[in-house]
Length: 253
Image (cartoon, rainbow, N blue to C red):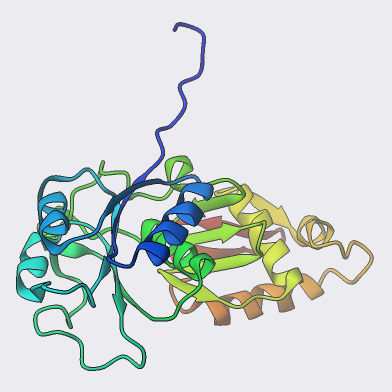
């Protein structure tokens, strides 16, 4: 209706899992995090849904009886998390390589916690997507970071995803362990992408307004080390004499 804001549709995740208890628990946690889950329990169903489904990511149980890794590889069109036995053995032929037409690939060994699965799914959803010229899924599929990639309590900018409820950070699809102060500083920057925040503003956001301004430099340096050279496909840029800025498209200064 006119004058009423349109709500973004939740991103869809294909969950292919043959153990009923694991499937039920995993689906429950993914839905609780604001995702739409399409559950299948057989290799045939998984192949059919991978080929023509609308999903932004997939979770595939490689221990599923009768699953053919080569057929799965040909059907993949989305980022994927492979569920494997524990301890993990050699990765099945045809699925060991990362990249290609599927975008991000992650491996999660059993037994795993449902919250751990949610973190990994949010990570692959926030990870950057290669350009169509490189054979990756085109833009406009819902995989680009932004409001549509954010769930309750979570936010996605560039290749970073933060969950304020669990103090979880994911960069480039991988969990990153941050202190409470580092998390608060990073959250302040991601809440205002492109905006320059002063050292005093960052420290206030972290709950340390009385400490010296240069403490912000220490926290930023620690974040840059933990997030890696690309800062999860975004950058924390230094604006000399002013403060810091988060930009998903510029190199760090």
